[in-house]
Structures are given as structure tokens and as C-alpha cells.
Amino acid sequence: MAAMALTERYAPNLHGVLSCYDRIIVTGTLPGACYAGGMTSFLYSRGAYFSPSWTAFQADRGRDFSVIVDGVSG
Image 1 (cartoon, helix red, strand yellow):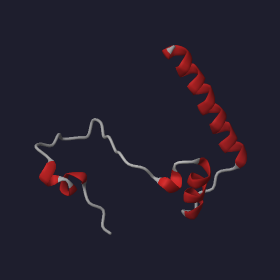
Image 2 (cartoon, helix red, strand yellow):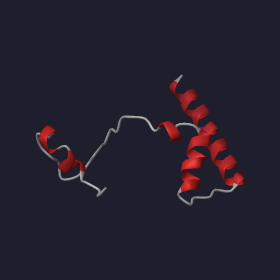
Image 3 (cartoon, one colour):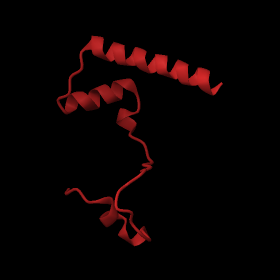
Image 4 (cartoon, one colour):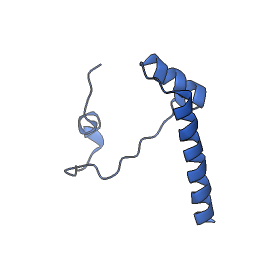
């Protein structure tokens, strides 16, 4: 399937187009990739590899960030 520009795909629903995308909202789900094991399988199937130490580091970073955001937002 050839890639199609969003403006071409949704042309009947568009009333105008900006010269660039400022924000894009994409809705839907990726059932196979919406949990850690599924995303791991998805990435591995496409040849991606991440070392366990790197993934643990990223998980800790995300957890730390969420604590900071939670503290700021109350």
C-alpha cells in the first residue's frame, strides 16, 4: 500500500489547509503495541534491539518524570 498524504486521504473532509502541521491528533489503538510486551514484539519484528540496561534506564526516567509532573500538577 502506497503512503498517502493526510491532505489527500481526507480531502473530502477538509475545508482548508495550513502550510504546515502545528498539531496533529491521531486517535485509535494499537492492540499489539499498547503494552510493554506487545511493543517489544513489534520492535523486534522490525529488527530493533534495545539492551536491557537501556530499557531499564528509560523506564526509570519515565517514572521519575511522572513523579515530577504529578508533584507540579498537584
